[in-house]
Image (cartoon, rainbow, N blue to C red; front, side, top):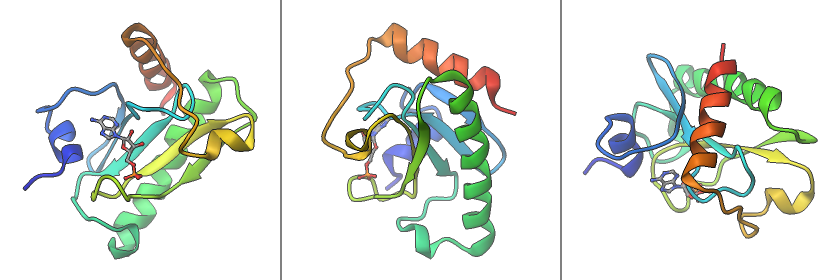
Length: 130
Ligand code: AMP
């Protein structure tokens, strides 16, 4: 069965899209640690990051770097943190999280955003993605 992220990539489930190329897709995390928390996903559906072929692994990191740079331009923060967890959704994804304190990196403190805020921040990051 297709993962929830494959359904998002295929447009079957809505998301706040940030960026896309031939092989990768980025969208806002729906339950963000911080405003601008973004997930970068390979279109190829693989569960664990270390099981990716090397080309896809390196491509995902390169794509995530570009998305992270766009986040840095838009979201005031000390830096963008990068995490890979994958305990909830078995489809590789890189978390890009704007950090101001260590607690922003913990998956306990959550930010509540309105639909308008999600839309605005996704569009602002998308506009800076190169
Ligand atoms: P993990 O698999 O532990 O790295 O966490 C999965 C992440 O995916 C969590 O931060 C969720 O908030 C996020 N997530 C789950 N479903 C969706 C969705 N439909 N849209 C956006 N983010 C999601």
